[in-house]
Length: 278
Image 1 (cartoon, rainbow, N blue to C red):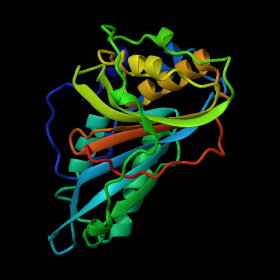
Image 2 (image 1 turned 90 degrees about the vertical axis):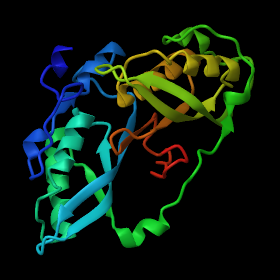
Image 3 (image 1 turned 120 degrees about the vertical axis):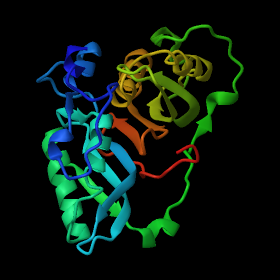
């Protein structure tokens, strides 16, 4: 926990109303990846991005009138850092009483500060009020395993539940679940999510996969690391030829985080579209 001793997460915080980029707090991805056997300097076994959606962004126009927008951030999985989520909320609140002369200035400011904190270029898109009606609620494509009848009393990560039927032909399949839950490693607050797994390989046992997803229920890990754990353990236990793992977590503090990891760069990058629970 030494890595988080200076982070605002889990602590009482004063909310600044004027722009302050110093509020952003980076957390090295290397901390969570080392636990998965991915060491600094080694090539990553996946590519991908983290989609961040912000629903509480406001600033002042030159005449003092408030402006609001939704914001979408795309953080490369190869970036050395994630951005601690409470620090992002504090940083975004610092815009509340700050005058910006244009939407472009807000966008450029966000892009500069977030990229500096993540250590890589972060994509920034602002959705203005006149575009709100165009936003849709989507659903994850694939066969949902949640209705399968399983019995379990295992609520800590148990990759032994995962296996593929190596006597069967190779298939291409997409599976989903809405039963993903893990916990914040600092505060212990629950993180709720929906999961999509797409792969080509020997058929993954559906019941085992569902029991594995449920086994994360009491696990403490950040969203990004949790998805990378799922990816690595599926690769190790089921040996798919191609694999992608996509989680869409419900929002906290007006922010939701949605990591996507894939074994191959040519696998389709899914749309950053809100689910009903988000």
